[in-house]
Length: 118
Image: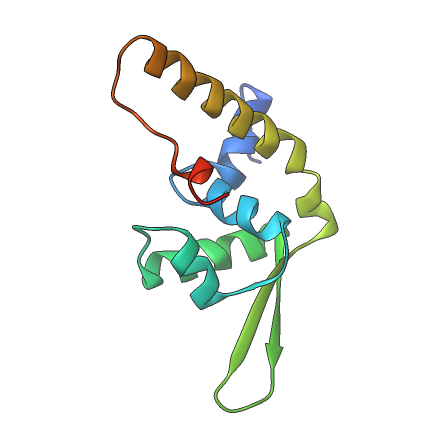
């Protein structure tokens, strides 16, 4: 039997780490192919992306649709269960933006690139 001391441990087990929350964030906005996800998440290798996608799929957060065509086409999407993580992902994004703003006001050289792409 798996035991947790705090509920956040169970949350971090599913969407914790460097990449999973980013993947979920991108899929909340719509279905994406592997190559689209890799382009939208700078620094992630294809091997790590595939591994993280498999883990999120195993946990029921995302789904995968494989088209029977050549070359193979695979699309990933957020599941109904995965949508329940939207609120926490949104809160993490909001907190991060506020944190960056505070650090900028304190003179730290830090920028948020998402503002440049909008």
